[in-house]
Length: 635
Image (tube, rainbow, N blue to C red):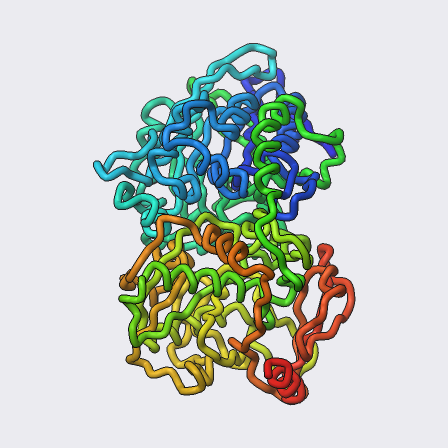
């Protein structure tokens, strides 16, 4: 693999090369270790990416290193660090220490930086030796919580070997939904502005202050081409703003340039450009390092961009890295890593049955049922027997580990036997808080219609067709435990994955019942869910302004841990929640882990063979005979 700069310089003109290196969505994956599975993860982690970063830096005379947000939260280790330290950390945060050691030139904030509240975030960032910028996240006083942008002055070595100054403006931007998503943790201390409108105001000032180049560190995905106020994934219209030269995108855990994007007039996934400007999105958990190479020429006293090249280099395919983590970063993380694992491996209970989620997208399973039971038990305790009299208490749960971009290893798989503290994190990976909300039957039905958008529209009578819409995140597929219903993917979806209403006449949810009777549109339900959903996470319009009946200062994961400890042995009883509608002579396929072959499959599910990217393909029959088997198994 050629790691040199792709453009040749002319020695008779004032030319120079500048390499922009980027990480994004590290999620506190500091070491090459998967804490949920408690095993090595050799192609992830900042300590592994650091080795590639050092090689990429050494290959060129001039380089800057940036991080694009979501670096402080996202692994069980990050939650342990946050919970075991005071709000203002007295010692340096392990992730900040590693980023300091690696020599980041600047970083921005992602949405998950705010999960632990503003005091903790402020304390951690105070220890950074690099600037952290974010322009559209404001405090209660209306001022940005960190500087909106920064001017970085460096000396470039040009084609003649002479040092020449360059000034790079860096602006940071984050999803404006932060204020809603983390409403429980932030308690009104944060407001947000639109990404593109904010950038359009600030970028001209960076140019006026002498910036030769402006780089947007944008913790936002590559979504629609046209700007909409408050859009979550705004990288494309952001790139169109005059004065921005390069964009580092993120948030959606994708890789750009790459085949996962459609070519449009604004997006070129082959060359890595948005509106003709270089852009990169370097995966997540340190899986990739983003590289933007710039060919510059000195004109009228300023450096100007002539040519550019973008790529995202995977740790797994670079073929350059020696085994093990970067020695310096590994040493910085080792103490916290060892102390955490000792705590994480403590036994809390026992299960006489294996708990796995390999078929969680096609049938009810124990992994979601356990979380639903834990949430409901905690909700009953919160309500104290006062609220909810006469109202059913339901529990909304979604599969967080269901393969997809995270790969075939990203599924719940807990063997029978001892239950450890880490198994609670495996069942519920996020630090969301528990909330109890009140909804009508009509709102409940709309919520389920949104969730049913996970499935592609199938054709009755056809036997070889895809079932899962891979662009619809599994964490949006909420299962509402406590009611029963059918999902019919033969009909068109009512909503897309952003919560936009596609067809008000579309209906996929049928036979929605409570204790065998149809749910009435006007009746009230209390639903145990999480703070992300309550804050509008996932774009669920039907939850906008929902009444919060009760909320818990503790996280859902702690409720799961309590449930595992209280139920010894843990013996969840299978109960019906949802099933697919019947269609004779119809089947569809879906991909899951090859490890699913070692577990009983739901009725109507049969293995087909290996699938791309290490997955295994299964077929699902919608024939009525399979539904009879499901009913018999439930009884």
